Image (spheres, protein in one colour):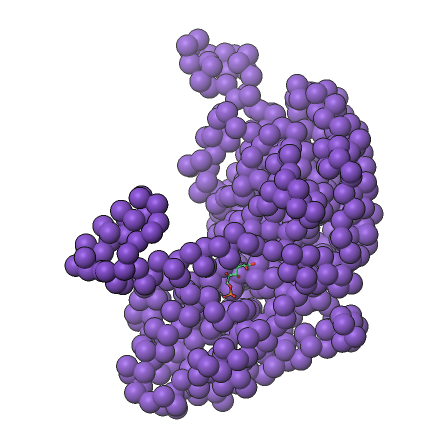
Amino acid sequence: MTASPHPQGLTGRPEWKALGDHYNAMKSMHLRDLFAGDPNRAKTFSLSACDLFLDYSKNRIVAETMHLLFSLAKAADLKAHTEAMFTGGRINITEDRAVLHTALRSPRGTVLEVDGHNVIQDVHEVLDKMARFCDRIHSGDWKGHTGKPIKNVVNIGIGGSDLGPVMAYEALKHYSNRGMTFRFVSNVDATDFAEATFDLNPEETLFIVASKTFTTQETMTNALTARQWLLATLNDEAAVAKHFVAVSTNAEKVQEFGIDTANMFGFWDWVGGRYSMDSAIGLSTMLALGPDQFRDMLSGFHDMDVHFRHAPLEENMPVIMALLGIWYSNFFNASTIAVLPYDQYLKRFPAYLQQLTMESNGKSVTLTGASVDYDTSPVYWGEPGTNGQHSFYQLIHQGTHLIPCDFIAFCRSLNPINDHHDKLMANVFAQSEALAFGKTSEEVAAEGTQANLVPHRTFPGNRPSNTILAEKLTPRLLGTLVSLYEHIVFVQGIIYEINSFDQWGVELGKVLAKRIVPELQSGSEELSHDSSTNQLIEHYRKSHGRS
Ligand code: G6Q
């Protein structure tokens, strides 16, 4: 199924124009007045789903805003597109692929046929194979080449084959097997490999080479270095089979590398890299958590899938958050969104979301190839609170940019020590309050502030935010949270009429770097780049005495 765009494009839709007119009425309204005028505002603009509580009342909206945004989603036929994704429609049209990450967390026994084949059965076969492997590692049945059990796991992968596994490992460390060490190597900068392995004993180390294509330069370079590192100590090619497993869709390349395909965990072309942390790409996560907790995480993903697929638009958490994102990006010209988890375990969550959101919706042509005349994905960024408060929040409070914020927090700490958690939560509530309501010059003056300092100490407020609250960070909850953002991205992609599931910008980088490597390594090869690139290459060659 393809999108059915308006003949004059998104901005030609009457619903879009109505939002533009509504913006003119809304832009000068202050959250202070909106709250003062409606004692039920917090209740009206809040929602619970899948153990998440979303308070979106501190947004610059009224009921009419939401009504117009939902009308836009309806005009874009969002529900039909959602069904197309869930049922295996080939919605990734530039690669002619289905987009079925939701199948990765469908319960055992359900059926979803793609090209006459039940993919859910395949999914569970791989999950079972992963679980058997984890049990062998954990029980010590799987031994390294010299007979020692595996204590260290190093995941080698990049982009979608790294960011999800690292984020999930960090997020769920509390639930992980503390007797094992987990490291992640992604960068082709050798420092990444060197630092990840410097204190590991090769005899007790397992490498997971995670690459959908098994051709990615960084991953293959790191995998070859890992093999060299292992053999430098173990000195026997046969050791590779005991210390390397692969996660890939490319059995031929896995075999070529020397990994027994019996130790390969597969997935499918309908799983995009940035949507793959719940596929076999999550093998390191399963090794850290154990199969049961990994399955809990999948259930959390599935909870949100069901909610997104079936809840009416007006009660649909991903839809509401996606539409609010569009409201700010396209009408208030907000070019970034800050994601601010008040939980140290979620320190890699913003980095994970950067890929999910920006690689998916950082596009400037529509599905028909026409150039867009509106902004698509905003820049996502963030850091855990309270740390961010002591650095960039200044700009969010008093700078010239409007930066909508997503605050994420948990009522219960996984490390309830003294009153740390009350203080953490007091901060998150105080921040969204200060952003929304600010402090007027009258209030500042009334505090006895020196007149010349009043403008500096005034906070305009009217800075929007969502707050997502959950009881406790668990594997299940993490799945729900990731799935929430996956679907936000989907909704925005549908409204923007773009393909959220290809990544030609990434492909370009892969090709360009390969061309320059031989030029760096040879001193004589003639250079035919622009003068700047030629000069930089020459500079490097000189430093290595190659020219
Ligand atoms: C994700 C992208 C990209 C990809 C990496 C690694 O959606 O396609 O980030 O995950 O380039 O690719 P491989 O898994 O094929 O090594």
